[in-house]
Length: 274
Image (tube, rainbow, N blue to C red; front, side, top):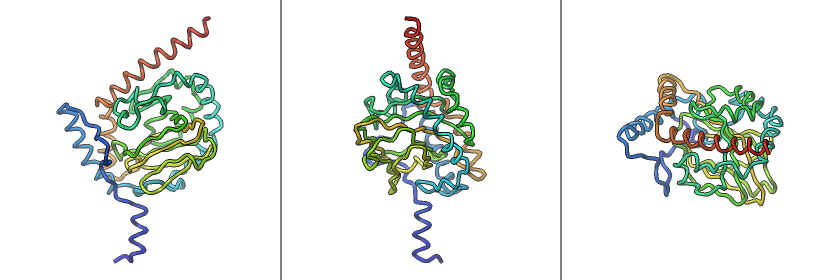
């Protein structure tokens, strides 16, 4: 039997996940197919937690993912492309304008995004605008989502959890204003404060919240990638992630993204032709 100290250390490495967040409505839809899909997701989530190859901490030691150093090394190239995108920051969409379900935690344009890819969808126009960012992110095994996440001054994202624990999340600090003590990302009981050029990997299936109490904009590269799992969880995880593209959550987001892109690049063309 493990000693209390060993049990405490094991608990810190693998804290138990809660499948829901107090005070927030779960992302559910009325359709029978969607409700069935979410029940399957709930089953696979529990399997994922017991079949992880990398444990289940809320925030990971980056040494677990050797490629993270390469992403950090190349951050200036990503920052340079971000700076060009931010020349039209006011035209970028609020996150909730693309993913309607995000309105449970953000209903204004204080949290903006610039999406390159997500769950089978690739924005060829945005990738063309950020080719180095896209090239660098190809070093990440199991890449699912790539975007810039823009948190405006005095914006707070309240406590919530991601919809599924079969993926992990990376944030790479790109613009981190001072004082850093006024920014933070709490994941379960740990608080991480972004640094420019520094990556952090965490499991967004744990309750987390983020805030920017500075008078300046904070931007990170936001990446989701497949969590390393053992069989049979890895197969079921692969299956669910490939089926997710057919759910209303993803299909609505894809349609909204395409509509935004059309307007954004038409306006850019009009400006060039003046």
